Image (cartoon, rainbow, N blue to C red; front, side, top):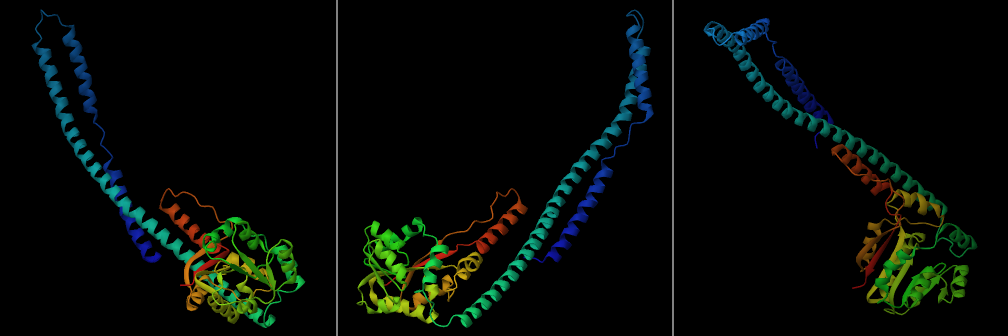
Length: 373
């Protein structure tokens, strides 16, 4: 793409050419008025017509008729050059109109290209500065968490139980149904960090054999009160205690971000041992690549430790032997409204809004679906 400065020069040249032709067209369209002799001859012709019509047939008409014919000839001699000049001018004017139109096209094109280049340059500059701010803030938050949170977060506390009840809404059923096609044929399912047991309830209703594990006793009591099978204890230790290839799938929702990077690697590797061939590992977490997800859900919870970019989690799973089959995008925030574009400028604005929506208002959560070969 050309620089706005170069496009400004092209636009100035096109504008100059357009103004030059426009002035020439104005001059060409000026037609010299008819002289007074035409009006004089027209009046004399009218008089001759009256004279001829007033004479009786018995009188000779040769004299008045001759005078009449001479006046007609004079009138024609005066009008023919004028008409010829007018015809030439009309031809010239049409040619100038054509040239003017041809110069108008590159002028409009140059203006639109210049405007588009400046708009994109400004948008890219703002996006780059915003990304720098996000990176700086992410680094600051990571540093603060490293200093304040030593070791694992305390999921077993009463604080975390009430914190979850207040800030974490029940999952949408349409999201839960996205996982059903994988888990129906991959039983039993371990819900790693099952929390209040919403997903276990859903699987039970759908006839899928599943059980959970959670370190928070209040969560486990709530699950058991609903008739759900749930183990109280450390999730990694419990997972490690199971027989190899005894599970159809390991599922976790909004759990991995609570662990250190080392523990996340361990969860992935141990799950690979415990899930049989053809089974699944499904992990749902906060989309920290989205500013609304990072500054909303991730920073809200003080027990969050590790931000997991979708590509990072995908790489970890593939490094652990899993085959990533799908990355689901979940829970979109309200985005800027789009509108139909009727011209190139409106199309540029619509594209800018689309890019802003795609970055600032991207999906707040995502889930990676991986299969054991």
